[in-house]
Image 1 (cartoon, rainbow, N blue to C red):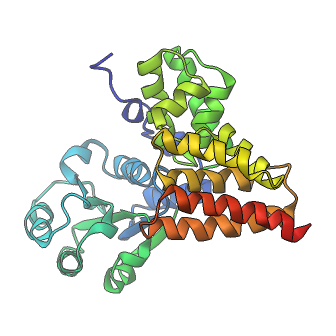
Image 2 (cartoon, rainbow, N blue to C red):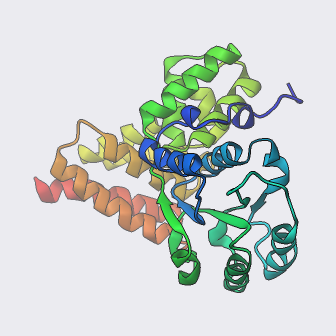
Length: 322
């Protein structure tokens, strides 16, 4: 088990047809691969939706047998200084590689929004100087942190979050291939904790399988170390009845288990948003109060007092509305 290949890598798509979700975006890149005329690209979107994987698929199609020599992949969150641009990137761009006509070397920069501004300015100059031989693909969560001169030299391609159904289908497929023992609530828990992030869903699946041998809801939440949504749901429902004592008892249980205030509030938001029993007007009021508390917690005030004040606000909302 210890030497087992991570399933994230084992089941990483190698062809466009294997990529899950973002069909229109992938189709656009497939057109580039057929025409061979690939511009510099910025791929932005949430983590774990297949940005880097899509670029690697494109590179394989374009470069064929020259893929290993003609592709440089760097994680810009680790290698984000100006020296990396001047040394690694520039040296690779200068290297001569025999490629099919009309093809270019490809430099993939993951987490490009983590690069310092100085490094980005140096990268801009490198992009200009080696435009005849090299193409750049920058993957990032948001394109706002990429400087304007680089954005203007790239085609910006946006990825969306994967749907729960897409994540679930992939997880079930892996469970069958790996003979994983699972329960329905385990699959639901994996989809819930992933929040559209395929990489996280597969990683959590493997961790639960290796750690417990059976994938059920309880084991998944132990691995992910997230507050159980059923306890959060009970707490929200007691708030909807105006019963602060019962709601506080559940909040205190979660807090005493060592869960961070941010995790508790984030899960309160997710559970409230998907709750089918709350009236719409009440759901909106609850989300407003939870959002304000989340902002306060992110500023560093994550005490039990803040969380209790939130419960009081939610219970008071009932009284005001009634």
